[in-house]
Length: 425
Image 1 (cartoon, one colour):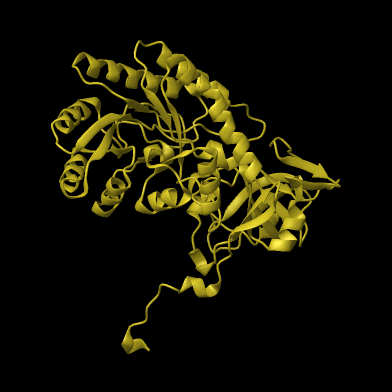
Image 2 (cartoon, one colour):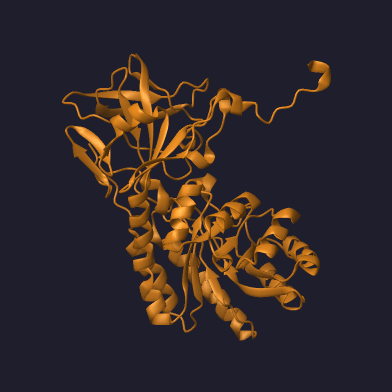
């Protein structure tokens, strides 16, 4: 049984998080159930802050961690991170709304995305965010137009560095064929345009090459390309205040696989930047590496059929295995002597609704609770109502107790936004 996370223990043959047995949490709060550890989030966040203190010390410049809200934008999670001092990487008006509601200072918010709407840009301008990471000249022109009525806007430009992140193709975002960012020639043109615009403040450069990256070499390559571009701009008299290198550091979904730590990642980036004579403020946008290992999805075994174990959680709750062939470690919440090789599946009408095939776990029987690991990122944030399934409850474990942080949806919630036209009444 895996106990590699900082907050996991085994007590009386029961797997526990922050001292709370998963089996008892499932019995008290029902299943399917998301569980997220406040303490594990704090541990992961503080690893970043400690690792990048060296950058601030050696450069006398600022380091800003802008947590990627796309990973998990539950208000309790974002409020916790805001209290710890985190900034926010947002990609929609909704995420910006949550960031401000969470108490994130505007000068620690960056707005990403390749298709920002007028409404979203106005929200960002009125909030006074640190930067729009501008994805195209078209977007820059729209921001300029809106700035005339709504006030000054800070802009950075998203560069597509054409770096292979060596990750799943669906989460690679920094290749030449990607829909995100601009090449440096277009970016240079956009920067020079921005410098002539009355209400536009050029503040920096941005890149984000992908997610779940477990090799440091793509990060180093991207950082070098960005630093070379900064030097190129400097030679033309253009100063770059902020360098935002995005996020993307992976986590060990496979528990027997060794991958770079947050400290390894920090040292790689810092050493690369320090090899140049110019040192901008550094912004990073981690998401998965902050919250993934803090989260678990619990499902109760409803039926057994040959090798198949059917649980009441489904791909509507955690869709990553279905769309990315993603691996998530699975354990029985109770340690047993006998193990069995099984397939773990949900109950949706989709062949892809499978959490794991040929997994050896403590023999699962009807009524047992299975624990799906590393579900804190891109779990509840990607949950949906397919097959008219209500989204699950979410709880947070902490030293102060266990708290419901997202209530389970009811069937009535599924139709709460539907409207029947008069002739069908």
